[in-house]
Amino acid sequence: MFSKIVVGIDGSNPSLNALRIACDVAGKYGSQLHIAHTPKPETVAFVMGAVAGYHAVVDMPKPGEIQKAAEEVIAKGVEVAKSCGKDSIVTKIGDGDPGANIVKYADEVGADLIVTGRRGLGDVAGLFLGSTSHDISKYAKCVCLSVA
Image (cartoon, rainbow, N blue to C red; front, side, top):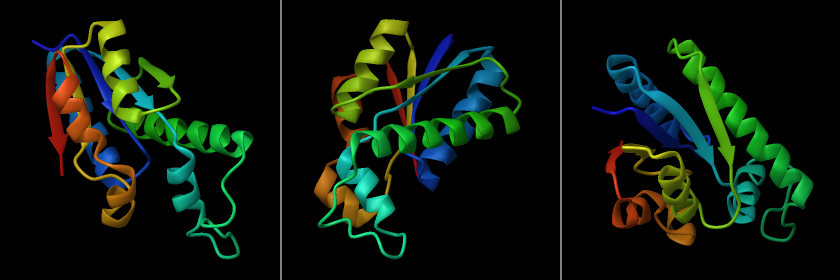
């Protein structure tokens, strides 16, 4: 039923829960698992702002910091997928709009399911950044699953 599954993650608990569910579905159907992440400077600043001494409002992260943060999110996703028994995992780091990138990537690989967390980095960040899962469900050409 689902041969290729794309999971959009941002490192938040809801996105990692979505990944766990995607791993479960992939295990049932023998699906190829793709983990996608598109960092946004605002999201990285929001996360880094939780660290004492970093002023997220004043200092936006540099490109190197954004790339490093993206690699850490992907590494955490791979770790979670492996703990769920998935060994063959394809990863993708995009740039720009996360929703558009996930839909585009799903089209490129021929995914028949996209799984995302319903809320990512929290209600406050969601208010400023918009809803990636909403955009994905609006534009995707395949089945979408939004996980709480």
